[in-house]
Length: 164
Image 1 (cartoon, rainbow, N blue to C red):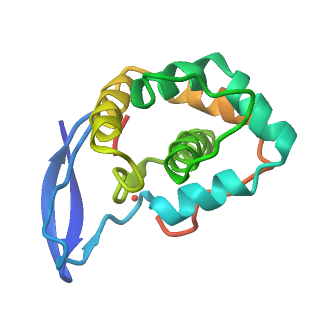
Image 2 (cartoon, rainbow, N blue to C red):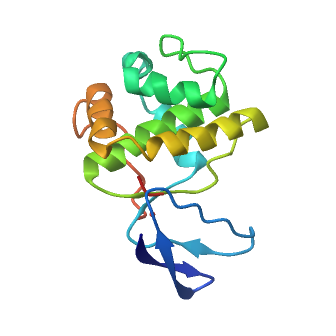
């Protein structure tokens, strides 16, 4: 375990972080995690929506993506790049941005990852995060590069903040 400084309502606090760290707080707390790439539900959907149809198909065909996807959507595979619901676009964009962060060598901070998901899918999302704790960041980076051609493609949000 290592320690990092977070900022809660403007006050620095030191917290222990591990391979997967969950920060739960009331919604009225302004939480900042300096030094990390922050990604929320709007950024994940925007990242997915920025993909071309060919990139969406390529993403759905990536074995690592399909394995991660099945943790959340246990009843269906990513169908040839067809992601029809907001929840599907959110999860696909989240996995994509995690790959982007890995390509950049940055640690992510995921805000409201449960957004747009049914409670059963939210439980699967927890399984996804446990699995991500075992995935090498390089594998996520390789998946992103295969879909987006190296450093091109959707950019991670510029503000800096989940360990893997």
